[in-house]
Image (cartoon, rainbow, N blue to C red; front, top):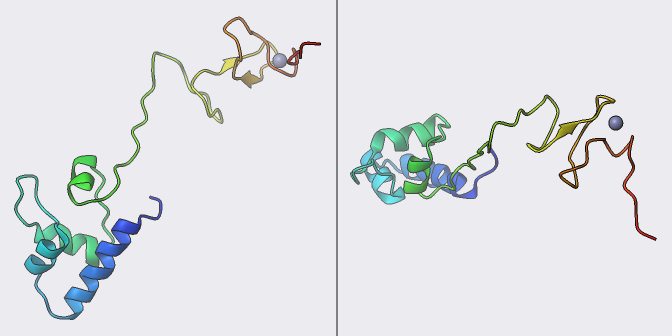
Length: 118
Ligand SMILES: [Zn+2]
């Protein structure tokens, strides 16, 4: 989880309201923490404010004003090897993984350095 200003705001405001003796119903209502069908959700408000709970489901996150978590989709059937940071890597005969700059490149940039035009 990265630092989320919106989440920080909810927790701070919730703590402040709790400190002032407001109920979880009031806190959830004020912070717009709602259930899927639009009712206030005091249980979720309490978990977020008291237990450092961060909703994981994007439908919930969006509903209460948090940024959705990024969705990573693997396209096709490529395999992601340990330590690689791209889907379209290939492995050179020398064993080095590389990201091809051209569909026909089949050697890494160490074995076959990139040629600049003269
Ligand atoms: Zn190589």
